[in-house]
Image 1 (tube, rainbow, N blue to C red):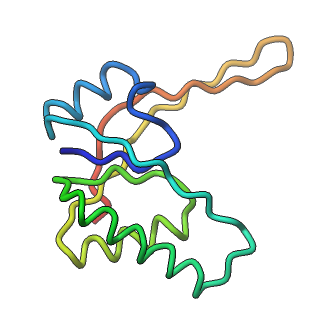
Image 2 (image 1 turned 60 degrees about the vertical axis):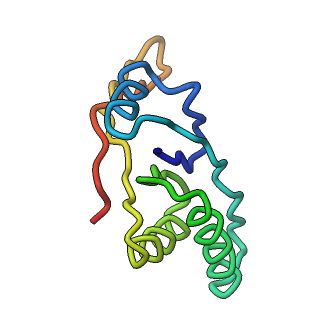
Length: 116
């Protein structure tokens, strides 16, 4: 099972991303990415990371798709990998359009990539 820990529920992923996840991992489960307040100190951040390590380990995923606030993600990936829990990110191609002075970006899924 792939555990999706992000602010992007898998129900809203493009079909090619859902298909890639299903081929690689079978099932996809979502776990909402926590709100990481910018005023959080390092100790509090570590406590939040520890909480998520336990939650994730209890779900026993084959891999965790982690996309979110960078310092939380970095610390969580380090802790999960110490426990031999595979961590992946999704890679995308950014396509930008400018129309009438307004820039719009579309992100197209390409592949999953391991953090290590």
